[in-house]
Length: 108
Image (tube, rainbow, N blue to C red; front, side, top):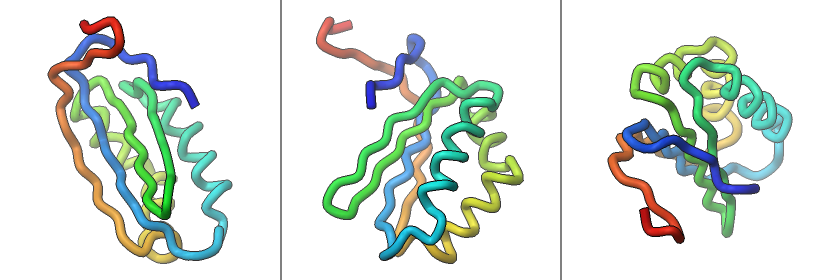
């Protein structure tokens, strides 16, 4: 998966860290659907995701906090959140941050 191509800051990052339960229980299908649905939302900029040694981290990027909050309220996303609490996650944390600086190999 390539890194998300993002605009110059500021923008909002929603960091979802999690430990999965055993078994899929429909997780893979729902995760793919949530990626599609998020991409259709106003203010969506992209995402990056990784899972290693049981720890999953997904960071979604939004033009501002209002866009990130609106995504949380999308009905189908709310259903997925409830399934996550009931079936898919042994533990999780959501952290929301404003990105004020961003740089890479070019040093900017």
